[in-house]
Length: 337
Image (cartoon, rainbow, N blue to C red; front, side, top):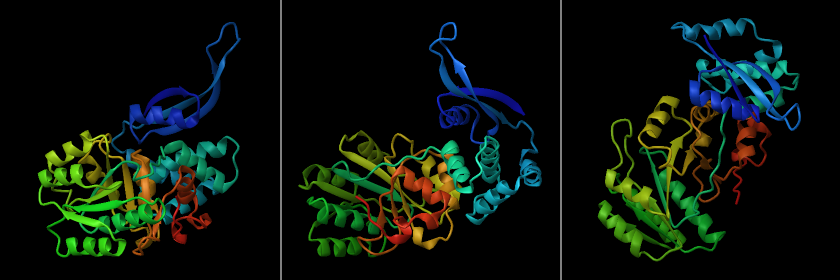
């Protein structure tokens, strides 16, 4: 095992430094407070020193079995929680090693240990959508893009008093245009159909609206990519946001493959869909363990506009920690401004 020490102002920052350099499979071996800098012991700054290790053994995967045999009763409870949520064994192992160190530091409350475990290992960020004029959404076929746009449009009209318009590029899916037109009819707003990127650009530049919601064509991003000219326009337009719709029912590998199609600088935020179609949050835990792309909103059902949630950072931590403690979370269909 390769051993290395990192220093930062907080445990979270030290973990981030370690993972950036050594990868997400680092094992936290020890933490302690240290004092650095100053002169003759004066004006020293308090920091956290984190000792981590990363395996260089091809049989690294066996450490999960060894770890299970030496877990404390509290850590066994944490392990049961992670298993219940469907977190894959390799990520379970690293989370358990972190929670073990937290327990050894003197924390004895289960909920506190789980919360600190997540805040220490994950960069949870949120990014409220629809802050610019152009809102683009992309994602696999059937992930819920069109319904999400309708929910965002209803909020923009009824809560924010904005004039909105739809543009759709999804001319391949049967009845996709009709579905968006039906939403536009109910919301009393315009909908425009673009058959190529050039026509889309013309609409974006000429349509008069406070917010334009653009539905891109659903694709199999395991084998296809977004047209380069469209992606170039989105990433180089100062008034454009680009959001990826990711289903919470998807496997981590499929979600990561989708993210690989874009750089982190191109993605404004993630729209997490189909929360109502899964009983576990393992996919969310795994996704936030390996990426720090912000979450923009969460869809919790098919009802427009109710089943849409705009979480804050602490909401996400609480959601991962113990979902049933979220009376105002996604299960309550609470819409937050």
